[in-house]
Image (cartoon, rainbow, N blue to C red):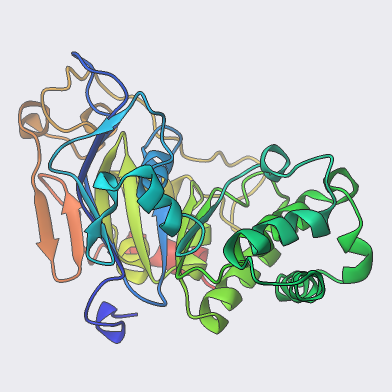
Length: 342
């Protein structure tokens, strides 16, 4: 899907976002991350643990540790304002109402001593204090229906521990949807769920994105999920954006060796019982003088060890690499078309 199909102006702009948890000799946790989110768009951020996905997502709503700090040149623009510079009172008006976020483990965020109905109503009352008790009850049932939970009246009086993991995650989505946010951030929300429930949650989220006309940022370490549901993808590694672009371009014609390695690590239906998954292994030493992926890159050359790569843009597809892979690489196209179909 071409980004020109969206509004000409992004709803959210992340510009050169650099974030550090500590001062000194350690490199920043996130460095020069930039990407846009358009109205009614579903984008994916992919990367392994420690790649900076969640740090970037939390920074949008100033939810990172108070010990950390964004670089002065960093900008996260929403509604014409840099969210990184807003005071707590101002960001609180945006947090939840305009931009909602849901995390991986709902049991951490749900109150075990309060019923599901009470917790949804609490969120509703926060944003719509004029609602009376009947309106709160009816709207709560509507939200449970929106996230496709059946037997709503019974669920209203039940507690979190009485629900399955998938049901609890749907409740968290319902709470997040209460104020009708314009942007929904899903941070690894399907990671702890089994494959079937995971797929159901993703179908629900894609449906909600379309019917409620909201923008979604979906964060995951599973590239196959992104390929099926996102229009664009941002690939992160050790705090930097390695590659970004339209999903078909990134998944079917990866330009960065890291993206290609992620695709190679996904199980394939054609594999027999004796086959082994490809892993991203350390191939050589790296003194961090050049590309951060140098020590694991099968395509690395001397220049990669010495020099920091600069971003290369090819239409809507960009890559942080000295030697981008051939976009027409036939074996990659063949593998990914089979892998990501259906």
